[in-house]
Image 1 (cartoon, rainbow, N blue to C red):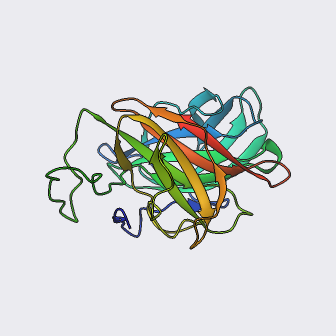
Image 2 (image 1 turned 180 degrees about the vertical axis):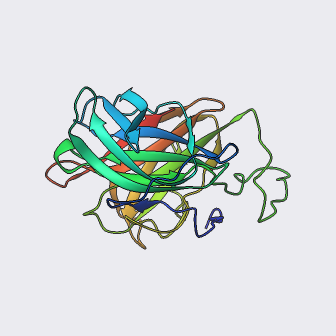
Image 3 (image 1 turned 120 degrees about the vertical axis):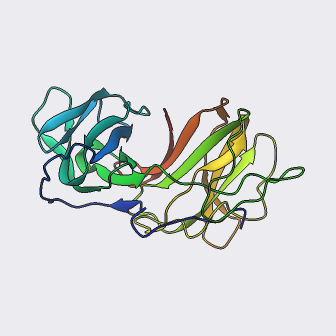
Length: 244
């Protein structure tokens, strides 16, 4: 496996249901939260936390800026901008000092909402004289690198193996991580690669049979690119690329 998943039990990428109790803010008890949309037809979306709007008019394949919110238990709601109709809701457990993303994907009539912890780290890509990586620390930052995140947001799809390859190269010998399935409790770490052009493929679990692949994805220096495996209304699979 190309890199290790460095995970804590609380650092999960999971489908969330409804519920959660609000917690009052404390002076130094803050977290950061943002909204990312990979829905093909939901239009502009807002994110509310305990009734307060923290992200407004987020378009498809875009993210909002992080906003400080009270740490603790809260309820998040995703609404169409300018509407009071709730398209998705989820409980939020926000730890002080952590940063989170609420990602929505899928068709508007069956919107999927997930929350991820934005602290994933992976081993640096192979190259000459790689820096040693301690299991408790991220690799040293480099101004020449971009970061990729690959998210399984297709509730009716099976487990698949994701690959990321430089444009023009064939499929790698191993996927970037396993398991890769909807609702997995594993932290999805950032995949650190030199800035440039790439393609992402999804293969049947344990095989090199490609089920779906992206177009060429250009990643700039310092950019974070989120590649989302999602669904259309007929449950066919799609790939969306969300930019910061």
